[in-house]
Figure (cartoon, rainbow, N blue to C red):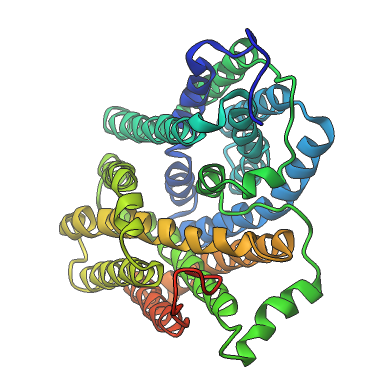
Length: 437
């Protein structure tokens, strides 16, 4: 499985580099939208609108994952969907420049959420259909690295751009759109449709593809979950023998709720404290660089320890970092806030995220290997999307009416609650016992 017919494989998997330009374009997008909404509406309204934009972005990703997933299962046209997704993203990005309204900005950001998911699953399937099985892990690692480096370059360019042209942030959407067009063209030229095709479900059955797919977007459906699926997952709380999975899901909800709260208000807080936009992009850039490096070592770190222990360590580090940023936001109301931001944000969004992501998704992987795997993954994706959406929506209002420090401290507290939940997951008495080993 996973072999292409002789002579059909793209040379040296060069098609992977078609993802680089689009990654450069998408990397700074969230930060740009938040800063632009503040520029349009002022600090308070801009923060609230930024939270609304992030909430809609996360909410749209739920039906988008369903739509594009079933589309690829039906059409089996990976190259066409990847190129289409990039082209539609390009149109949405350029359109930011022509409609400079709050409603238009939020609507276009939502469109990007929908169309960008068109390429997430096909990229994973394409690797599995064009590479030997023994090379899957390396190919997925290369895809992640190309995307990460692209995001870093995008943030670096945005940082320099806002330093040189501080009043022309919206103009940056035009070259971003051009980069997305470049990716679409490269996809058409470099990608060859494989003669053998896999269903999406195979992505969830292979750890490298599963991890890479969830890193692109943590929402991934194989089937549409029903109400009974949700009841079955959480009904296990009643018994000490079956509570591992529901406790894991609850901790996941707390993690993404906390992330939505923090990430939505972090950029507006830096803007409020008179940190220049170029330095705002620089803080996010440092976090992305640290995250990219941390993922290179995260697998070995988690692999040599208990999954529950590493999950707790990731949550604790992220929680303390959020609390530290919250305390700094309370006492350093000014440009000096950039100092703790540069130290603590990379710890939270880089090191802690890599540790938690690797351990939590390893536990999720073992869950989807069990009975009703599609339903389990569907429930997981739904609760992740809803939690992220809820956190983003609440973030703006909490920050405006109670203070940014309240948002950050509350986000940290949620992670400590998550530590308590993960700590209650029963530890297996043998390597082969239990779903969450």
